[in-house]
Every structure is written in C-alpha cells, then in structure tokens.
Image (cartoon, rainbow, N blue to C red):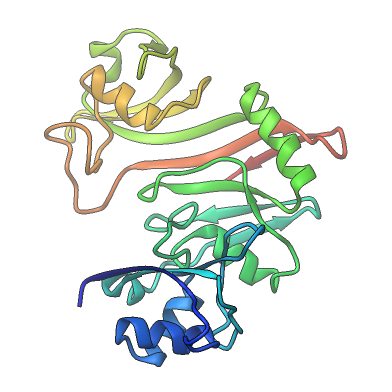
Length: 272
C-alpha cells in the first residue's frame, strides 16, 4: 500500500461514523484510519461550511457530507523531530524549529509540522496561525500567532519588512573573492530580491565561508538561490549548488528576529 486518495459524498446507506465509513470505502484497518485521522489526513466538508480536518474517529457524519482522505503509509509512520517553545507571549509564541520539521502540513497530514506541535503544546486552547515559514530542511527561530488579530498584525509587519530576519550559513568558497560586496540584488521569479550578508570567517582548508545574512525581501528559497547564483551555494543544500553536498544536512539556520511588538509597542529581539 502506498498512497490512497478518497473523495466521496456520504449517502443514507453509508455508515454514520466516520472511521467506519473510511474503513469500508478503503479497506484500511480502523486502527490505521484512527492514526491517519490523528495525523490530520482526513477532511470534512459540510454544506455551507468550511472544509476542516477531522481527528475524532467516532465523529458522526451525515448524508451529503463530503469526505476526503489522503493516506500515505510512509508519511503516517514518520516520527517528526520535536520543536521547542522558547517563550509564550500571550498573543504569540516563539519557537525553535528543528531541521526536518515542516512549517505547516499538507492535505496528507500535519503531524510533521510545527503548527500541529504548537497546538498540542497549548492543549488546543489556541488556534495557531502561521505568519512566516522556514524550509523543512532549515532549523531556527519561528514566531507563531495565537489569534486572527495577532496573525493580521504580524503579517503586516512581515509584508512591510518591519521584522528583521537574521540567518547564519556556511557556504562554499570565498564569498568576498567571488562577490566582493555585501548585497546580492538579483531578481528571483521576475521580482526584486535583496539579500545582505557579512562574512564572519573563511576556512581555507574547507574552502567555506561562515556568513550572517539579512533578507530584505521574502522570495521562495531566496537565500539558497541567491548564494547558488553567485557561485557560493549553501553547504549541504540538497536542491541548489554543485560540490556543496554534505552528510550533516543543510548549513543554514534562522538565528534571529527583531521587531516592534504590535501589542506592547516595545522592541523585541529574539536570538538563538
């Protein structure tokens, strides 16, 4: 069994318990169905209501409900690394996301995401909102909002570049020799993209540079693509660059955030 995707309306002759319905329609055992539901792989769309994830195996369903199951057995068996809550600030919390953990889930589940771990950490008393992302391979500091109001305020700050994001990376080669300035201003996907950096150390034996990075725009894989474009790809990057592979994983970490708190109106500096 690899992947199973089920999309089906409930009829009056179908089982009225969602786990019974899914097991009947897919021949997947109820134990595996329960696990898949807990992992966020099952969705319910009820008339005139928004589609939602359903985790309770005993939930009653009605004729006319639209059920979706996205089952990937290999994904179900993953035990994701655990994130760490660094601080709870009522309106938002600050987290250290490890490498290998997604920022948010997919239709196939969310148990491998920091969003799910945060909601579980707070015993589901908060609806957690994602206001920025880190690539799955990248570890580092993340900010999560605890309400729609908080998410809206922080989204505006991120959109207006009023939150300074700092990264540290190890890249291939001597950056200053290949690109003797502190700013990469090369468009990505037809849009302006600005990456500023400072070289902390160059290791002659390893032919690698340790750099601190601040991004002024938030393009897809901006840091990884920019340094690959100038011939200094991030060490261990599985997607970009040549001659930079490493068994230690990608050498890129989000190490800091700095912003004016929209609630307390005070400067906040977060560093790891």
